[in-house]
Amino acid sequence: MSGGAASAPKPLPSSGPKSLREMPHPLATSSSEEMGPALTPSPDLLLPRSIADKDLSLPNGTPVDTSSPASSSSLLNRLQLDDDLDVETRDLFVTVDDPKKHVCTMETYITYRVTTKTTRAEFDLPEYSVRRRYQDFDWLRNKLEESQPTHLIPPLPEKFVVKGVVDRFSEEFVETRRKALDKFLKRITDHPVLSFNEHFNVFLTAKDLNAYKKQGMALLSKMGESVKYVTGGYKLRSRPLEFAAIGDYLDTFSLKLGTIDRIAQRIIKEQLEYLVELREYGPVYSTWGGLEVELSEPLEGVSACIGNCCTALEELSEDMTEDFLPVLREYILYAESMKNVLKKRDQVQAEYEAKLEAIALKREDRPKVPTDVEKCQDRVECFNADLKADMERWQNNKRQDFRQLLMGMADKNIQYYEKCLTAWESIIPLLQDKPETK
Image 1: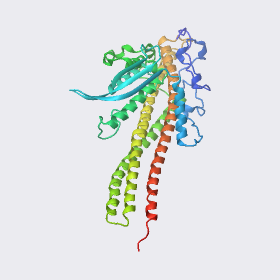
Image 2: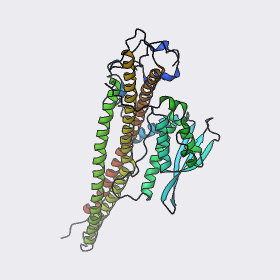
Image 3: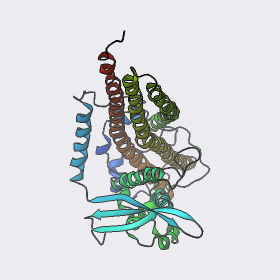
Image 4: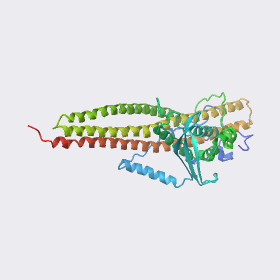
């Protein structure tokens, strides 16, 4: 902050009637005249104001498009078209593929190929290909949290995604993890700040990542150092209204998704148990048909029908396991990540409040504002602006992801019931055309 040694502390910016896109980053300007009147130490660092007209503060999330597409495929095509338009403006592309199993004396692990294509000047080459294991992705996420504490860092898939005994080297598990790691890097790639982080650059380009891991905090950017939060014994009096609304929304969101996740897992478990019964049920009609000459054809038809229904149900269960559940879990972890950023923000606000009160207790007519107080104010402003921007970005991604997810789930269920309907309709002619015996 410039020229603030003898001036009163500046107020924290409030979003007010402006949209998040219109809000300048607080560290992007050094002008002290634009910041308005002085702030006195009180629980209400941000003026209470109505938040009913703000998308990010609505308990039920932001409004979604209520128009009804002609078909599920038309919406999927429209969403895909939106993605294609975004691709034209991107200058960094990252993919995770080609998982390989490595068996060593001390351990067995999986590595993934991370391919990068870019036109950014920060990269020496237009294309890179490196191999990374899960703990490397974990290292990257930790470094991003350390160097960009004001930003929402995308979550990694859990160490063990599926509850119970899981073969983490099975094709299904490895593919599920590959998809999650690929999405993790794409989330970072699409972020206007995280994608320029030098730790991310190192992760994408370094052939030997272990050498960089040993450097510890040496690669922290100047921005990361300037906004690194301080963990002290400060207690926040009250969270500003708009951030309290975000916290309440995240609590409710996590609760709802957690309930859906548990019920969906029970449904899949019951479907698999039902499949076991169906596989035993169908062949009984076939063996019975060997004893009933006149009923053999319709009985064989029923057996085949049940077999087709088994196949359809198995496909539906696989889609739920591979496509539906991972998205739920990612957003449950996402909400926890956002809560952690909120806690960091609360800590720096509490520190700022305490320092302002210490100045007020001196009872000077024109108290001199120490530099550390101004830096603390910068951290609060930076947290506020970055958290709001990331929340808006997260809400936009969430709307698109869940529209696509629910539309896909509707498609899969329609396909399942259509297959079952076709199977059962196929045996009707066998019963109708068979003449009655006298």
